[in-house]
Image 1 (tube, rainbow, N blue to C red):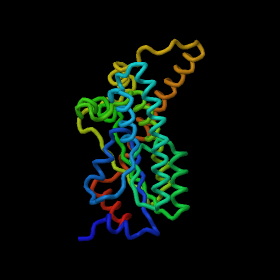
Image 2: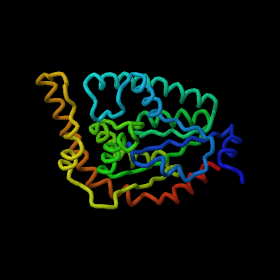
Image 3: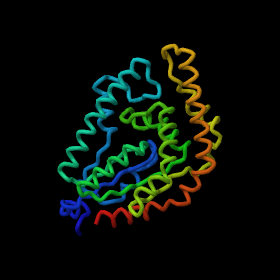
Length: 264
C-alpha cells in the first residue's frame, strides 16, 4: 500500500500545504488523526512556545499566571514567533509538503502566506474546524490539569478573542480557498450556554488577571470599549454566523476523504 506521505515526497515540483484554522481546542488534531500522514512535517508554534515557557521557568497554566509570569510569557511568545517564522521559511525554501497547525485568526497573515506559497508552486488547502464557544473555553480551562501540566492553558480572554476572530473568518476563508476548503464542526452534545454574559461569568471572571498596573482614565475607557465591542461581536456571531458554519460543515470522514484527494 502506497502511503500518502510517499506520494507527497514524489511531488517535489508541486508540493502541498494544508493550513488549519480553528480556535484553541477546536479539535484540529482529532480530524487529522485518521489520516495516514506518515512523516509529513507539522508546523505548530505551540510546541516552540511551550519549550520557551519551560526555559523561562513559567508554569503552563497561563490562565492563573502572575504579573511576572505574564510578562515572561509575552517575551517567550515573541521569541517563539521569530523562531517559527524561520522554520516556515526554511520549509518553503526546501519546497517540503507540510501542515500548518495554527488558528488562522489573522486573515491578513493567512492570505499573505497563501500567496507566498502559491507563488513558489504550492497547492494550498484549508481545513477549518469550528467549535462551540463554550466547548473552546472549557477545553482551554481543563487543558493544563488534564495533561498533568504538560500542555498550556491560555488566559480565557485570549481564547474568547481568538474564537471570535476565527468564527468571523469562515466566509472570507471559504471564498479565498474555494474548492480547496472544507469545514468540520465539533459541537457540544449536551446543553450549552448561549448568553455571552453567562459565558464570561463562568469562564472568564474566575481568571481575571491580578496585580495589573493601574490604568489611566483614558486607558480604562479604551479597555471597556474594547470589551463591549467584543461582546457585541460575539453576540452577533452566536446569533447569525454559527448556524451557517455548522450547516456548511461536513463529517470528519468526509473531510478526511477530501484531504486525501487533495494530497494524492
